[in-house]
Image (cartoon, rainbow, N blue to C red; front, top):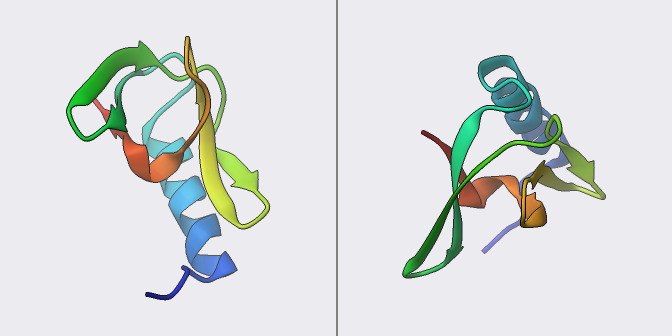
Amino acid sequence: MTSPTLSTSRMQVERFNADNPVGKPVTYHAAPFRRVSTVTASKAHLFGATPVVWVMGQGRVPLDRVRPQ
């Protein structure tokens, strides 16, 4: 399995931010059978090469585990 390229990660962040303003309700997939309803607390950004976003009550989480409601 290969890691996404930095440009792909940047595009993912830009797309998420364009569609999801801070305060948007989201579902965080914390574990296979654990879903948390919360809201974004920041814009998405890169942490190293990993796209992340801060969500209320969960901290900084990988963007691929966050789905808009």
